[in-house]
Image (cartoon, rainbow over all chains, first blue to last red):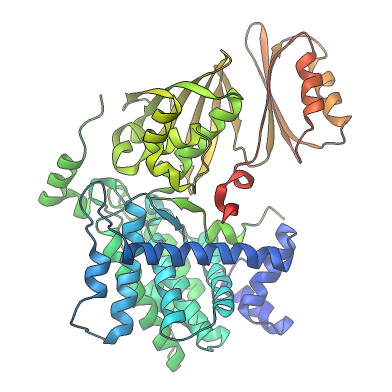
Length: 290
Length: 231
């Protein structure tokens, strides 16, 4: 069973009268010769890992070895001012929590990468806590996100060294946007619109980590990725359309990634990494090898 | 139709951060070295190359490799404290750094392990991203395998008929050979045989008992061994 474009997945859904989660369940069961229970068992492990990483970042002391991250998740979570209500504030704190746990050698589920691992957990926990979606349904949301990730991986790249941060937090935001639309009852077509919106907002985003570490700006970009996912899902659920179809937007991310300078793709030498402050931090954190 | 990716390639791996290449992949290289030693390691000499050499501290590469040598999977939270655990367990180690090797992939580690029973093994592995790795050298022989399936590694005197005898011992147990790679130097041959399933220790012992065989190890696929299932 093979899906090369999101349109293939939607076509399968219509033909088989199934939703996108069921389509991806069929895909995994057929290709990997797994039982339904086995797939859900795996999804549950991913969800538990995600929930634990959010919880850890919000409850434990998390200061990264470089000192660049210092208990920011808790700071945001308990902040008195809310720009868009408690939902966004909490969602942002949850994304930062996972970024901090990751930087401190805690356990995370890459989704799709370690550098973008905060977005899906933040969105899923927020859908459970603030939208009261049952956890069993959340597992179907994970299946929907995997459709987006699968097609993105086939036609573009998750690697910061190939597609910049567009390939990491961009693809994660698209996966999360699709999940939100699905969990709030959107159609397959609306799921694709949300993917289009989220990726267009990430188009050309560079990967310029200070000192080459998965901390700055990765952690706060995860937080912004969460906002991207909710905004994209909001537009799609309202019924407006991405004029460029999602599959074509994905192909455009490939072209843009190829055109980006290698210095701006996870080299740790361009963009923010190459600012005066970025270089100073790098010097402080790394003593030269040998 | 080529092999399709799993949804768990996208939702995963479940791993100890911060980096799938510099942390998760590094721990796997250590873990495979331990399997190839097939003994409790007492001493490790680890050479980190290129990007591993330059950024190991910030990515916890040094902790991850020691964790792997201790037998921890890439998602085992003990990785964070692996140096303390190793010290308590009596493992000595030494890191060396080569920041400028053109011979090896950017994220490469050479791991030499010495075991309690007196044996030792030297392994070179590269971390390819997403937690995937490739073993490139064992005991100086060039090899090329990913340890995603059961892999039998054999070093033997290079005598005629050796391949037939070894593949015969495997076939006898009804185990399928998925791939087989052979490399040679002046006197010895190295075989890396990827299997569709595990090989009973009986068959392994039979191969080991052949007088011209010097070294036999079965490397088990990493995912199955991960501590993620303990939860």
